Image (cartoon, rainbow over all chains, first blue to last red; front, top):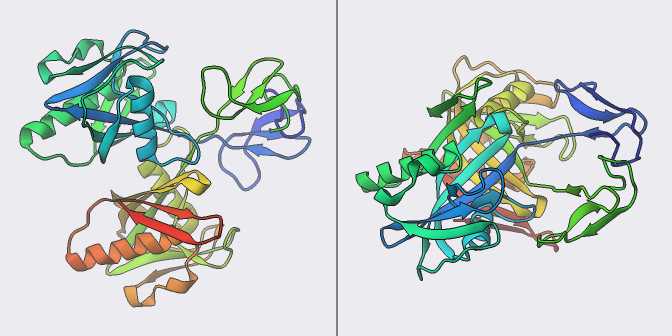
Length: 188
Length: 188
């Protein structure tokens, strides 16, 4: 942040405002304080028969890697709507019966992932603009070493564990990437 | 948004960028697109013996009304940490054993509430800077008509319903305030 979006001043300081306990961008001219908060990423484990829907990313980061349809929740929508919207945008697939499955903290990048199980009742999918390819795959076809993000591996591992048990339940946890780039995973 | 926080220009237009489908603030000089996303509010139903912790708000909105300790999640923390931090900031109480209890969409104000059951093991609480007063109350002492927000009523109703059943489970839903100011509540 180089300029104040309220008054246009470049007299911006990164400091702890009076009565606060965190660094914020503050405009020293008009007094506006700029808060930044974590973002929600919402997505689906979209099921059809015994298969689930994967998308091959057509965008950075991780261009060409496989992922579950998911993306940033927008203002004025629900998490469920965001997850279904992303499934439609990335795979032109209509998700229904959404059930909250995983709530994961990614504090190193200030994101909270909220993943839902869902059904694609007509089994239809084709690439949206953000995907090179979409596929419904069985468990043995999951490209475990070519998934886009650790949270995608974790969500799919939890999903197939639950499916073997015959019961889906809510999973809450945390994935962090340490400064040395190692991944640290906690299931609460 | 009146000025671009990247280049200081006031040549800002609220328009749908190429390849997007939503209105964003866009700088026509440097090309920066400004995204806004929903915020997470995290808080606790903080239990001690058969009582739960309420705080009387010392800040607007709803100055003087009673609430559960809750507030905006900050960057680089987990939801659980945010809920415990807010409980400490508002009531100087140390929350432990946090379990996710309610995930509620408030799309009209672009917020997602994530409320946890938690224990205050030592039963200690006193007002933080954002509270006029704190109290551990029994169910019959809840000031139902003097709670700060509909989501607080809803969370407490769900909590006491579950407590009577002897089993806490996750609740997912939505509260919206319609343009005519009526409250619309959905339990998914």
